Length: 137
Image (cartoon, rainbow, N blue to C red):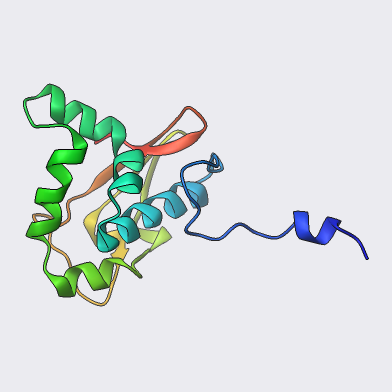
């Protein structure tokens, strides 16, 4: 019996922020899906990790810190929308790769059991920083 097979297993798509994401388009998609699922579950730790740079910009512009603003965001999302986000995926055909380190995730790239408008979910920009993908805008 070899332990090599255990090392080659693919990590779950819902990996936590303690492991770096690959610097690939698929890595960015997995990280954004992780964020969407976290919003659906109201997982503040994961949301503030993935959206940290964007939340910091918002804080610098006068909004409160991530840990106090996202609970307000959670309240604005209906239970049906939260449930849909828990299993949402991203359509790789609808994303825009600006550079290898910067990928746009338009609202219409989110596949879920309900349709989200730009006002409800908004498009996001993910950038590869410090060995992981983060929402920066």
